[in-house]
Each structure stands twice: as structure tokens, then as C-alpha cells.
Image (cartoon, rainbow over all chains, first blue to last red):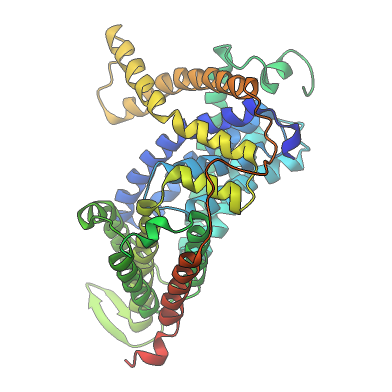
Length: 193
Length: 252
């Protein structure tokens, strides 16, 4: 899988991971404080922000694996920056990335419109929820409460990660700095560069 | 002795901690995570030089989170069987509910202590090198991550510069938190554009110096696995087994 990757694409994902790693940590602290008052549901509203890097990187690079590798790198960088959630973040990164990757793989990496990006956010939401359900012990909560959590997370994944990710990447494309990546080649009319 | 965990092989430490966490996820009684948490703190006391003041500062938000878990479990519990042990206003708290609530709160504490133990005793660069040498992570990714990590201070400076430039031109008139949240886009895009350029430059520089991304047979920094690593893994497992079997020796 990695053979077809250029080094600059990997370093690009890594630098994006650093920028978003800081954003992620910021949101994590906000989430932690909120969670004290309104319980674990506090994370659900902002959960989509944690999937944004996989969607932005896939939208720009458009190669199989871009979603899962970028999200894993982002999680690894978050761990390197030193935070108290620690090594288990790497695993959650892999799982969130796989959720988005599954959606892109289902379109055979050919469609990158808003709907697919939003679906990718939903995919990450579902995968990460299954993981959180197990590790966070959500089985003890009542079914209605768990369904509410999942619902909020799906909406958050579709809006924050899908719509937000596309907005950021399109803004970046307008600056002209993405020349040399698949996203700007596809805009010129080629189906898939 | 006091710095054994600092010197432990990071990949082995990572695996040990991950195994511990996944095992803990199967328990819903309050004693297992509590005993485990105490065990982790004992390990921290014996084998690390972590300053407890720093530790407390990092743990503070997790005490708040644990409290959030505690009351959410009481209010939104699935299993409401067992005798009522406590009632506040019109909320009847049963034995099962209280056990689950305490269990989840102690689980949050145990997980965060374990994670902090890792974060405060591991050198990031050694961790990446160890992932590459012991867990066969692709060098392309390993060095890519390292480049990103080294750029952190540069990106921090850039963040300050962009904000100052905005302020200089009178572009920022953010008064409330909501405006600030939307204003983040104005900072994010120039930062990402800068990141794209830096990534390209760094990648070209690496390739120009002969980096191919292939696995090498020898390394400059060799990360080893020694007897101490096995001893420490066994200690982690002892703590894990002791906490999981608490009903056998903790007669309550």
C-alpha cells in the first residue's frame, strides 16, 4: 500500500496532524470539563472534529489508505505532544480512520463530493462509537440514552468532519498551495489523477 | 530502580498498557478498577521519578470527568435491579447502579493514570524509533511523523505571527466565544497552507539526501529489549491479575 505513496504526501499528513493535533487537544480539554457537568454525552457534540483530518487528507491526496494513515498519525502526534489520554488514542485513531476509509473504499475512491465526505464522517462516528461502547462501558447506560449519544455523534461526524472538512480543504485549494496533489488535478477535468 | 519505567522499551510498555486497558473493559464491579488503579500508582511510586505535583495537575480534569461518569450512570442506568441503598429527591439508587457508577468512575481514573504513566515516562523520539525497530512500522511513516513532531515549535511561532499580522491590520474584532470559534478558520487556512509548503520542502530535502523509505539493516540509535523489560511486563501482568481476581482475596 505504501509503495505508491510519495514521501511529500506522508510528510504533508504528518504536518496536518500536528496542526490538528493541537486543535484536537483543545477540544479534548473542553470536552473533559464539560463531561464533568453533563457526563460522557459532552464529547458527542464535538466528536466530529476528531475525524476531520482523515477526511481532509483523503479529499486532498485521494489514495487508498489516506484516511486511516492520516488519522493514525494524528493520534500518534497527539500522544507525542504529551497528553493524559495517552497510548489508547492511537488505537482510537486507527478505528476512526477505518470508519472513514470504509466509506471511501465503498465508492472505490472515485467519488469525493460532499455527500461521500459526510458519509465518511458518519462511518467514523459509527466505528468509534462501537469502540467507545466497549472501552467506556456504555452497556450500563439505558438503551435510549445510548441511542441519543450515537445520534448526536453521527450528526456531529457528518457536519463537523464532513462539511467542515470540505470547507477547510476547499479554502486551502483556493490558496493555490495544493498544486501537485490529486485534488487540484481532478478540478482540471481529469476524473482521477 | 527509580527510573526503570523511564528506561523501559517504549513499544513493550505500549503493548503492556494496551493489554491492561482492554482487559479492564470487561469488568463492571467497583473493586477491579480500584485495585488496578492503586497498583498503577504503586508502580509509579516505585519505578518512576514523576513529580506528583505535575501528576496531580494533569489528573485534575479527569477527576471532573470521573464525576461526570458517576452521576450519568446513576441517572441513566440500564440495570436497576437490587436493593435501594440511597435516595436523593425522587431518584432511587440501587446497589447495582451504585456499583456500575463507581466502576466506571474508577475505570476513568485507572485509564488516565495508566496513560499518564506512559506519557510522563516516554521520550517521543525513542517511542517512534522503537515502533520502527520493534513493531516494524514503515520507516516512511516513522520519519514522516518525526518531521511533523520537529516542526511543532515552528508551527507554534507561525500561529503567533498570523495572529499578530491579523491584529496589525485590524482584522480581528472577536468579542465573544462564538466569533472566536468561527475566526479560527482565518488562522487555520494560512497555517495549513504554510504546512503544505513546509512538507514539500522537507520531503524534497530528505529525498535529496538519499532517503528512500526502505527498511534498513542497521540504525544509529538502537533501541533494545532487555531483561528489565520482561520484569516490568510481568509486574504489569501481576497487577492486572491481582485486580481481576480481587473477589478471591478481597473478602467483602
